Length: 563
Image 1 (cartoon, helix red, strand yellow):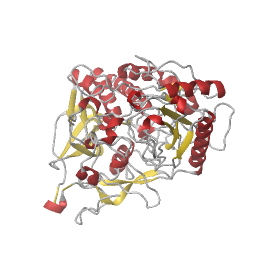
Image 2 (cartoon, one colour):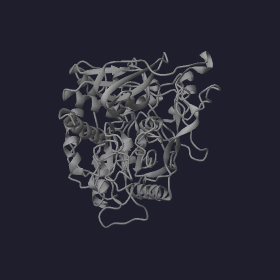
Image 3 (cartoon, helix red, strand yellow):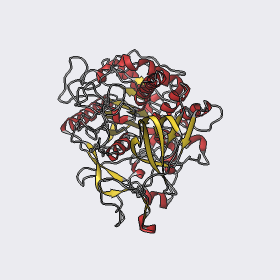
Image 4 (tube, one colour):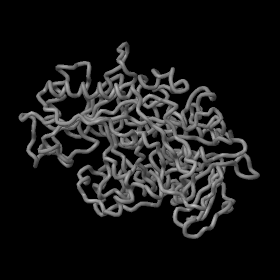
C-alpha cells in the first residue's frame, strides 16, 4: 500500500524535505541552527527508547528524547483501554478508512485506534506477491501503549544454536543478558511462577500469574500425564492494572515507567512531533552527531546535536532512517559498509486453532473471565531441543486460552466455550527478506518511504504445519472438537518484526558490534529489534529492553571515561 507522492517531489536520491508540496509548492532547504549539545540523543520513545532514556539519565547524562508522534491522551475509559474486551467497541468510520493496514491488527479497537498510525500519511510499499502488514504506533510511548505484555526470556537454545546463520549468529549468550533481564523484570513488576525449564529460563516475579480457568487446569494436568516432555507453564506477563504514582499510564508502557523515571532526574528533554529522517556528523564538529527532523505539524525543519545517538524507533523505522542517512563517507546509508543493512528482516509466523471445549470443561458465561494476553497457559519450545531434529529448523511456542469471554465466538460456539491455541514460531534469517527505500513513494513529510520485501520460506511453512498437527493431536486427546485450523497469516501481523541491522562479531557480515554500536560509527547505537541476527520463538519485547539496558549501561561507562 502507499500514497502517490506529490508530482513536484524531489527526484534526487538524496532526500530533501518539503512542506506539503501539493498545497504550498515550497521546499525547505537546510535545518535551523541550535547551539545546545546533549550527551545523548535518543530517537523513539517506545519500549527501547524509554529504557535508553532512563538508564542514561540515571547515570547523570543529559538526554534529548525525540519521537515522531505527539504526546497522547488517555481515552475516556482509561483504565482498560488496552483490554481485549474493547475489540467489540465500534471504530469511527473515518479512522478505519484512514487505517486500512492498522485495522487488521488483532489489538485494534474502538478505544485505542488513535494509537495506530494514519496509513496514508505514513505509506510503505511491498511487492504485490509479498504482502507485509506493518502495524505501527507513532506517538510518545509508541507501541508500548499497545503491548500485550507477555514476557519470556530467550535461552541459549536461541542465542547459541544459530552460530552458523545470519553472519555468525548472536555474539552474546544468555549469561550476558541475565542481570539486564532481572533489572527490566523488577521494574515491570512481572507476574509469573518458577518452572525450572532450560528452554524457557525463569524470571523475577513480583506476583503470581493470573488464575486459570477450569478448562485450562484440566488441560495442563492432562498434558503432564500424557506428554511429560511438553512442559506447560502459566503466562508470564506485565500487569496493566499497575501504575506508578503520578502517572495514569500502565507500568507496561514507557510513558508509565521509563520515561516517567527519566523525567524525575531533571536531565531529560522530551521533543514530541519530531519526525527524524537523518543522522550525520555535525558540520565543523566531527566529534558530535546531528539528528535532523521535521516538525510533524508545522513541517519546520530542526536538528539536535549530541555526543552519541541511540536509535530505538522500531525495527523497520530505524533501518529506514539509517538508509536515508547517506553521505560522502556512507553512500549506501549509515552503517552499511558490509552491505548487510536492511537484510535479514524476520517476523514470527503464527497460526490460530480454535476448538470447542468438551461439556465437562465449560464455565457458565457469567463466570468466564476476560481473555487477554496475560492469562492462560504456554507450551514452550519442544522441537529441535538437544539431539532432536525435525524436518525444519528452529522452534515454536503455543499460547493456550480456554473458556474465556471478551472475544468473538466461532460460528454458533460462544467465546466462553472455546479453546484458542496460538502458535508463534521462529522465522529463519534470510537476506532476501529485507527493508529498502522506495525510489518513488514518500511520506507526508517528504521522506523516502520503506519498501518491505518479505516471504515465509518452506522452513516456516513446515514448522507451522507441524504446530497445527501437534495442537490438533493434543486437543483431540482430551475430547476437544476442532472448529478452525487457521491459515498462515500475513507476515507483520504478529507485530514481532526484528532484524535487518544485525549485530555480530564480524564487521564484514553485520551492522553493529556486540554492544549495539555501528561498526562504521560507534557513536550511533541501534537498540530496538533491528539489531537481532536471529528471531527465536519467544515474544521479543522483554529481550529488546534487556539488550537496550546492556548497551546503554556500556555507553554510559564509556562516556564517563571520555571514551
